[in-house]
Structures are given as C-alpha cells and as structure tokens.
Image (cartoon, rainbow, N blue to C red; front, side, top):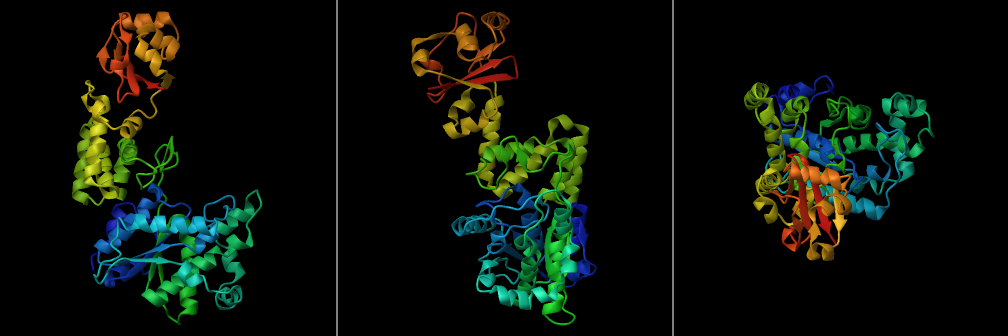
Length: 430
C-alpha cells in the first residue's frame, strides 16, 4: 500500500496518532471511520476536512466508513463546548440525518461495488434497541469513571464556571466508543479519525474494542488539527455566518468568494489541506504566488478547486462570470444575471429603497444621491462629486443635469450607483 500518512503529513492533516497506525495503513487496506454530528440538515466547511480524509482513504485503497450520529446526536458531544447543547427532537434529528447523508453522497459513492467501496452507517440503527440496563452492564462496566474523568473534554467542563456537565453528556464518550466497537465487530473497522478535540472519545473507543472484542484486538486512532485562520478568527464563518456545502444555505457565488478572499498566509496552508493537487503542483503555485502576490494565483486556484469539488465545474463558471460582471466597466454582465445572483453579487453593498412611482416620474440625480439614498451627506457634497465627474449610474458617468428614470432599472428592481472606483451603492425599487 502507498503511505497515506506521509501524504497527509505534508498536507498538514496529521495532529496525533496511536503507535502502529502508520504501519497498519501501509500493511493492508484498512476500514476506517469518521463520525458526523447531525446538528443541522447540512454540513458547513468545517466538515470538509473529515470528508477530504475519507476521499484520501478511498484514493489510497482503504475502505472509508462515514457514520452519521443519529443516536449520539440525541445527546450532543461535549468536546470543545463550554455549555450543554439543546437536545433535538426526533423529527428534526431525522431530517438532519437524511440531509447529511445526502451531502456525503456527493463526495463518496456508497453504491459502488468495489472492494473498498465507501460505507454509510447511522449509529441509531444499533443503539435504538439497546436498553439502559444492558448498556450499563455490557459497556459501562468496561470503562472506569476515573478513566472517563481524565479526558480533557470532561476536565475542562468540570473545572470551568457554569453548570458543569450532565450525566447525559458524560456518557457520550461511551456511546461513541461503542460505535467503534460495533464497527470493529461488523465491518472489521480498525481505525477512527477525527478532529484533535476528538482524541479522548476516539481512544475510549480503542479501549472498548480491546476489552469487549477479544484479547489482542487491534484498534487505532488518528486526529487532524482543527483548522485556524492566521488572524485568529474562527475558520468557516463569514460576516453572514457559516459557509455551508449546500447551495440552498450558501450560494455557489458566496462559497467561491469565501475562498477567493482568503489571506496569502492562509491560502498557502489551505491549498494543501483542501485540494487534491499533488505536491509538485502546489509548490509551483506557491512560488508563482510569491513572485506576484497581487495576481492571487493561490486564492484563485483554491477557490476553483473547491467550488468544483463541492458543486461542479458549471457552477464554478457561473460564479466566475458573476464575479467578473460586478467589476467589469460595462453593465452587460450584470444585466444578464438573474435576480438571485444579482442580490448575491451586491451583498454587503450599502442599499436604500425608493418608490417605483418616484423613479417613473423622474428624479434629479442630486436628490437621489442625498435625500433619497443617503449615499452622500448633503446636496453640496453630491454636486461636488458630480462636478468632479466621479459619479456613475449603472457604470455610465453622469453630470448634475441627469434625471433618474425607469430606463435605468436593472431587472426592473435595481439601480447601481458608483462614486469613484470603489464606492458602490444600490437603490432597490419598491
């Protein structure tokens, strides 16, 4: 087998692993699982790393197992959390589980007939008929409270201010550990991967495998680093919230723009983590970027690769066209955009509403720039900008005599104002 650990290490995807993990992965095709928590009916880009790990496993000849936590999702993982999560009702949980299955199926072919075909499982299927008494007797007695209390996820919650940790959350590591045991027994799963905050839960699973299956049973653990940004802010969020992997929650345009706006430092790190480009290609891109950072070749390649991976090449082309349309000195591209895409493109641009009847009657441009929109603070300021020839309506320069009318409407709903090269303002017609 090719050495997948060496591949993951140069990409910055290995944080910690149990002794013997690398040797096992080199020796033979190894069933490996990663769990996904159904807290929503979609996944955001924080879940891209585990998805990419599963794809790497498949590409290197190993058997990836994606576990959706229909049972563990009823409790909530305390790892990295300062407060207890709100419990989800069964209807919401089932909706979330189906949504996540749908997302994962875009990256892994669970209908494949190959020897190392990916497998999709839901831990609710084997936990739903487990009585509390049986779980306490068969699983609980295998792991001591001392062992469980020593886990960082538990210690941090108990030592922090607040309400501590409920018994429900305390049992989470046992339930996740039992998942590993079950998959070891039914799918010959030998390795669990996860984020670095999952180390305690994963190692509880390796202990249960050894104590519940048979003497000498092998089980391994590997974690990847939690993704961070160079400026210290949280990865995976924009000003508008999470960046999701489904277009109904985050448009393809916004998804593309998120990666395109990555800092130089982060782009150099992310292109190794989030793409499947080989080392030679990535090293060449990094060197090219260092010579001419203003061309942003790393960010462009990162945005392109990820938009194709998560959406499609066709959707990438649309996102590139929409991006070009806004910055094009002519209106041709913007006029062709549908209303939804146009709204995405102008998201973040200051806006004001004016009535359609006012526009149809004709509005003096000075009145538009000040009184009707607030784009300028006074009529005098607006007139000075017009005299300096710095005002455009729909990217056409105008002077003080200009009258805004219905012919200026884009999609019968918008007018794009511009002062200088970078200051935009949108009028929304109501």
